[in-house]
Length: 302
Picture 1 (tube, rainbow, N blue to C red):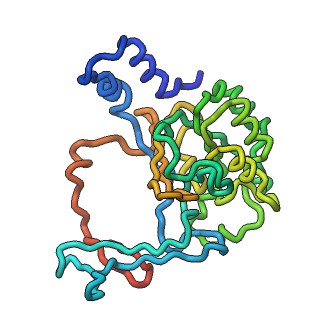
Picture 2 (picture 1 turned 30 degrees about the vertical axis):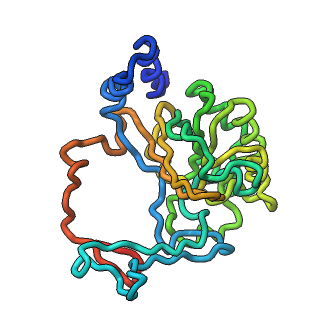
């Protein structure tokens, strides 16, 4: 039998706790201590760097040391006691993303208008790795979804569904952005997930929803008020069912794309990820080598 989602015992605990109490209500703290304290955390986002794959229509981005506008000198640890970075980003469609519907449809919410309720959701991961090995342009079908449900049960309403293809294993090879055929999600599958299963959003590893000439899947999503995740990573390190996903993104005013942080919360006995560790997490440990600016890569390295 599949492991029950982490969210279910959490909700059961809250339900059994009785009616809401005063301002010192600590039921969520209790739920964390009993259900979430030992979970394994797996990052599902790529690191943003100047050379990562990006659509040629946006062009490259550039990082540089931040400088004092008064005299132009770059801040340094030695002289100023700190350093900072200047980011010249060519687009908000870069790396791991959370696309708000305003990316295509201005009548729908921009990234800063997405509700805070996007923060934590059940996560379902549907693999099409075997199909992609036979056909690099394979797109998730409704049959793939119902086959997943036969193994794991019905996808919960409000869940996030990520499609694993292992396309991202070649990241950060810039050639990924030039591929004409890549794993996708069919329009029929998107309609099924949203209209029949009522999910919050889906995500995929490539930088587009599908390789159709008119990007029909993305067009349908955006023009019907749905967000989506792109450039998701490390889906081979999370369970197909039973995990949660935490979603974080900067709220740029009127933003039509979003640099996103997706983190899977997996069961404590899951073989991948890292658990919270009070002896390591704060204060953070010193590194063997200090950061320094590397002109060759255009980022700070150790």
